[in-house]
Length: 99
Image (cartoon, rainbow, N blue to C red; front, side, top):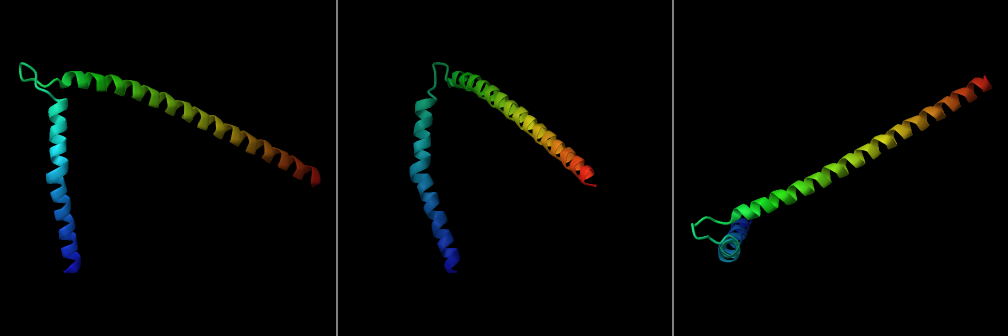
């Protein structure tokens, strides 16, 4: 029962903090950020457009960075394989010379 009581007490503490501190802070933030206009429409359209613009820019940067690293990785792998093949050919030639 001790573990169950400790768990219940922890959950009650989290619940109280959410109800008394976090939820009122979120509601006050919403009131300041999402002010109603004359027609009682929230001006989220501007926020959404800004977010979409920034998201597209971020996405294009991320995609170009990923492609750059993929091409580097591919080139590195190809160079590594060529070096292995060259070393293998040299070893085979040396073995043929010794035999």
